[in-house]
Image (cartoon, rainbow, N blue to C red; front, side, top):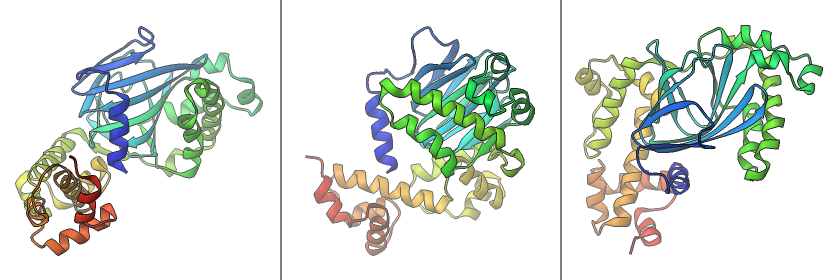
Length: 322
């Protein structure tokens, strides 16, 4: 599934050169961005005071600079992949598929977005609560929506994350599924639904998935070592001693950044690499098993079937690259 998502995003961004973040419409957004990969940000005016942006990225991350708008609440929904923000105060928050983040745009005027899985896609809404106070849509006004109350509850505090749940999915999924010509009407409907949902949301029920930026750099070094040497199997204790980080912080930090426990993540990483080798090389199954850290061909075959739902030999016959 993750491979399919990354392939879909890569196909959508194939016309964008490396090192480029394309912002549409051109000249319509005052954002200074630098990336080591490539991406697209397509902005849509929803209401006076509300602007949406569909985002898609490939790469390790992007550096962002924009005006520190103190009255603007940024809501970001991660559709797929994984995304994190390194905030200027030294903290970092991470979102997985379906998660939602809420933070004031003054907090991320100078920040970096990172993509631990190498890709991410989502939708952000910049909501100017001062503008909504003077020009609020009729439906929200009739429902008793009060921008000032939302500001006190969400804007004037640390970033908040809301884990994936049916209510959030019901708000965002119809927007992604809509054809381009109908995106703006769907956004008008769903932006109002989102604001009504946030009006009843209690922040105390959800704490940020937050780690310190310094710690995330250690976690990325751990990830780099593990994924570069798939033939080796290092224990949590060995990693803890090597990177001078206690075992509980290592396990919690890795899951916060990459969205899965180390063992689960590495099992998928090994099988993804094995899939590539089965498609692109003539190496035997036993050789490939050893290259990705399995001494027993039987254990490799079982792990492969757990992920790919077929045996390695069946996968090679079905997907072999000519």
